[in-house]
Structure formats: structure tokens, C-alpha cells
Length: 345
Ligand code: COA
Image (cartoon, rainbow, N blue to C red):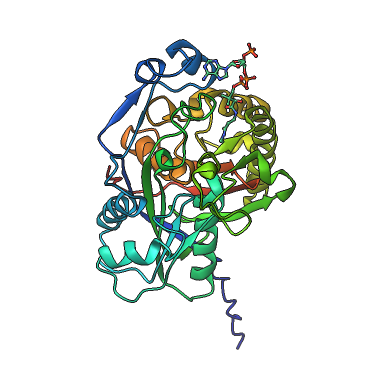
């Protein structure tokens, strides 16, 4: 008698899977006309050179933790979960240097004693944080992770500086990731990421840290963001283009396979140059910069949330999220869009 040998089929590789998505914008808006009334700039210049028409700005009593909590609540409701095993908050504008803002957010979300920490990687912070969350999930350190990107950029932007004030806005977005398998809807692919501290001074808040503690009024300007716009622009286009290719290749995709490219909303001309360099048609590159500006670490989850609600992200689509920011830092990952995900804004 011959027995057929049973060959175990290989189980699919583990992957982090997207199950919840939410975002929050403070209600107050600042239009280009509002800015032009107090700065040497025009609506036309801002629209043409950056692609922004308006941005949302939190009121003085609202801090980053407030924005983050709202987005976190929506993401958990979207995921239909009441508990997660860890909270990672990507932000460049924490409520305080000490303590971290994530434990405050976890507490307010009714998540007592879960590990919670801030992650600072500038505008790349959210993609960095999803990469760390995926690692925690792969290692079985956490089953489900809430990843939030939240910024109150208006707290660190000089309202009198026309080279930064038109660009940045406030907001928050969040996702819930859980354990899944490569290739299933919602699965994140491998990340590509990197940094180059040689350009640390290209986007910098010079004061307030250990290098230069600001304790006198003469240092006030050093508590604002200082930016070398042209240098940032050039590096952003080059790095985002390259890291997008790396993430696609790591997932086994050709660039032409990308159905939606979710680019950090820094400048509409940066996104256009990246899409052009990669040969991806503009209709596959959603954008919300016109209405929210550059929200730094909140940019990617806000754009995911708005694009999902607008119907631009559909089940099974091959998505790449890709970002660049202060540091310099850059990061990208692939994502198969989930089947039934209701984004809440
Ligand atoms: N309104 C009107 N004119 C302005 C202006 C403003 N807000 N800011 C600059 N200008 C003027 C400049 O003075 C300059 O005038 P000149 O030609 O007479 O000297 C001209 O516009 C061009 O300045 P430049 O700095 O070369 O503009 P730009 O096209 O590079 O645009 C940025 C400036 C900041 C919008 C652009 O460099 C940028 O978006 N960089 C990336 C920033 C970014 O994404 N940061 C976050 C990264 S995560």
C-alpha cells in the first residue's frame, strides 16, 4: 500500500493588518486671505508655490494630546475595539518635553497601564511609528497597537514668518493595527526607511532642547521652526521617490502596480515631482494639502482617512504610503487596502 506523503502547506508570513482609521481637525480655519492680511504674501503665491488654500488651527487651550485623543477615539471606534496593547504617538509637538504625551492620551482613551510612548521623526514620524508597531506585532510583544500622528504645529510656527506660516497646519490621524498575514486585505508590507543627520539644521527648532535651553526672552525666536525651504524641497523629492521604489520592490511590486500613492502632504509640487519621477498618473495620487496644509506627522493618517471617506481608497488596492521630514528622515511601506474599513473623521 502506498501512502501519499502529506506536504504541509507553508503558512503565510505574519504581517500587521489595518483594522481602524480615524482623524480629527480642529474647527477653526485660517485662509490664505487671512494670512495675506498680516504677512507679505498673497493667496495666489501660496496656492501656486505650495498648493494650500487653508489650514486648520487649534485654539490656545487645545494641545497635541487633545487632537491625538480625538483621532485615537475615532480609530478605535472604526476598528470596533475597546482595548489595544500599546499606543505610539508620532509627534514633533508634544504637550511637554517631560512627560511624554502618549501616556496622557492612553489614559484619556481609557487604556490604563498599556505601554505608551512618543516617537519623534518629524513628518516621517507616522510611517516610522507604523513600522515600529508592525515589529511589535511580529514579535508578539503586542497583539493590537494604536498608532497616532498628531501635531499642533501652530505652537511652533512664527506667525510673522512668511516662509513657514503659510505651510503648516494642525490636526491628527490614527490607525489600529493587529496581527494578520501577508497578502490579505489590510496587510502592511515591509517598510523602507532611513535618515541623514547631516541635514539636521534644514528644519529645526534651535532652542529649548539640551543643546540650547532657552531661558531668556532673547531666545524666543529659537523656539520656532526654522526651515531652509529650497534644500528641503530638493531632498524631499529625491528621498520620497527613492524610498517609494524601495518599499514597492521589497513587497514584490512594480511601481506601475501602485494603485494609490499616499505622499506626505508637504507641498503639492513635491507630490507632483515624485509622481512624475515614478511615472505614476496624478489621479492615483490623492491629496488634501489644499484644505489642511502640512500637518507633519498627522499628514499621512489624515490623508488616508480623507481619501477613504472620499471613496479614493477601495478594497484590494495596492497602496504605498511615503514620507519625508526633519532629521532628515524618510520612510515608506506598502499596504493592501482592507475590504470593510469605515474611516471616521
Ligand atoms: N509669499 C510670497 N513670496 C514669497 C513667500 C511667501 N510666503 N515666501 C517666499 N517668497 C518669495 C521669495 O522671497 C522669493 O522671492 P525672490 O525671487 O524675489 O527672491 C520667491 O518667493 C521664491 O522663493 P523660494 O524660497 O525660492 O520659493 P520656493 O518656490 O522654493 O518655495 C517653499 C518656498 C518653502 C514653499 C518651498 O521651498 C517648499 O515647499 N519647500 C519644502 C518645505 C517643506 O515641505 N517643509 C516640510 C518638509 S516635511
